[in-house]
Length: 377
Image 1 (tube, helix red, strand yellow):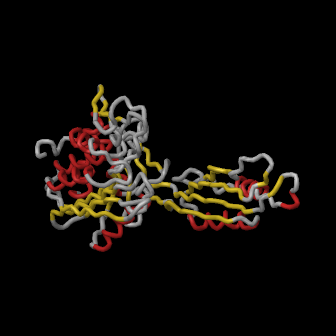
Image 2: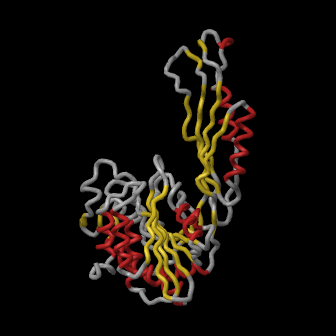
């Protein structure tokens, strides 16, 4: 291990070789723990939750070199299911040309490996470094980072700055850094009626017209026009149905699902109540699940030092963005300033997911520069 601890390619290969479809436990955490123990970290691994959303394994790893700031790196070892049709075994890392293929190469075992390799070259920095690693980011995210935050509170662990290693780059390593994310809320609409024969509508109560009126009213909503850092919020109808296979039956129930991605001009609770009023006016019922609130880390010290580190290695000045889906940064933003930066995201969640071998080493150098700027001052 000591001969490979500063080699991000070898470390990425080792992590990929541990199957870890979400929710992840076991071998992949053992592998990362061995890497970090070799670098002087104290590792706290713990399992939380039960089926169907668990059990989930999490890790808090700490290394302190005396007084100074606390810099945290957050990420996840779980991956999405690989699916069928890969050119090679998704959990047997394979180099073809300039690319390393394997599930998790980009999202996000490669970033974790590059950070570990950077740590190997930053052993003597003052202050504290932590890794906050979950096995539940790609799944329900119920027993993952939120459980880590609870555990940190119990142990009085409080980072000053946090970097999340999600694959934020688009076309070239370093072209984008995320400084915020939109919030997300999913809603389920149910309208109940009375089943009956279509030839005798007076003996039935068709719920579909009421559902149509509800969805029409929702479609008329324009939430906002966006702001300086966020694109406009959007409401999307993602499912509709009555479960009715017969042509001569009025259904007893009609259902629909909507998803709202919203910026920092809204909260999940306020949006839920706005939609609930529309649904209940037609006699419907609304259930909602808020996956996360919008957050923004305004440009400042953290985004500046990350951007400077990227520029010193790649020559690029990254765009500061809030685009894309949600990430666990939505939870960590309650603790301290958080930004996200990692590998190119073109192949994440796809067949034959791959990372450029060169990018792993360049990311290692960038992460080392970020650590030095954040801790050594």
